[in-house]
Length: 178
Length: 144
Image (cartoon, chains in turn orange, yellow):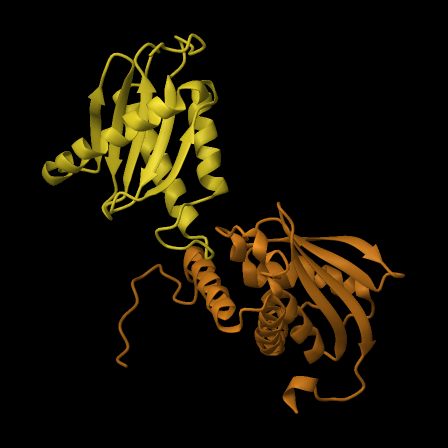
């Protein structure tokens, strides 16, 4: 493939946000056609997100040198909401609903780019449309040896990702990399 | 047919919006609240103007087709997208009405909302559309 000169002023690593939303939307629609079961589709989206997350962790940490080693959930939530999510999605997230002695929290995204044009039909109310984001968070944290369970839920006005801390992993290799 | 007395003479008179697909399949429509009583007549008027829209399409040089047809009570405007999707707008003749640039702007907003609605990954092609973007634009237009 020959290299073509890029027009000046265009950052070749950025893409149109609409293209991103439409691509993800057609991915979810195809998965639904293939599996026909929302539970399986949720699992697949989570797996896709997880694989992305374990790679994004290194990318993120190499670019953001000022991120400290997280010692508790509050720090972790802070880094995710204020640095990681804006860096990859371009939108900020807010933290809310702390539970279970500070081991669980929710990340709320007001303008999730994935769901820009999406209206879930009533027969797909159990579909976690943004589960890929939840999977990516799970993957990224597992790459730094923190095990969490994440779920993405669509509310009428925002997307909520519930993160539940499980444990610090003692093994040196994250589960996906064996 | 009696003109309903509750139509405001100072409003824009927007009564009915509809989007019709390439092969005349109805995709979406919205009726203003004040027009519910005359719904059938208004809808028939809107659909009957589609034949004229088809004729005008052949000779048209731009997307906005302008005023299509009018009788004593209603008049219609139409706009056709480059993909052959027709947008029909019915107003009543007694109200102040909208100026030409206003109608053009209205169709532009409607077209944008239509694009957002079909970008929904769960929308089936050629099926009736149910979208919050279209509903929102329709509410804004009827509220003028």
